[in-house]
Length: 71
View 1 (cartoon, rainbow, N blue to C red):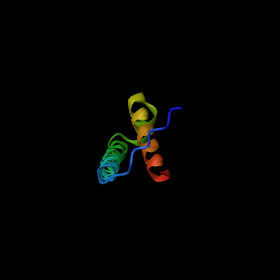
View 2: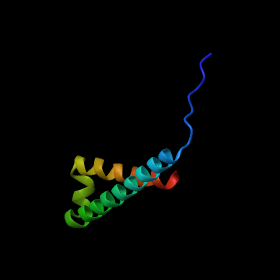
View 3: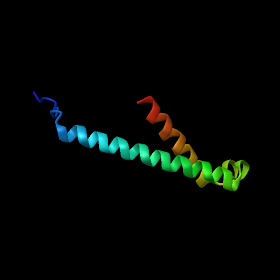
């Protein structure tokens, strides 16, 4: 019977997880600032209603922030 491989938690895996979590947080903050600047720069109506690219970008940012706070 095959056994499931479970790696041992080492200092390297904890460091990797911490670094990737910090990079993810930094990028989420950066893109959130970009989203806010687009809303102020282009206006709420233009940003949310007229451009499909901006809609997809904004939805991804909201999803990322939601996932960041729930995990």
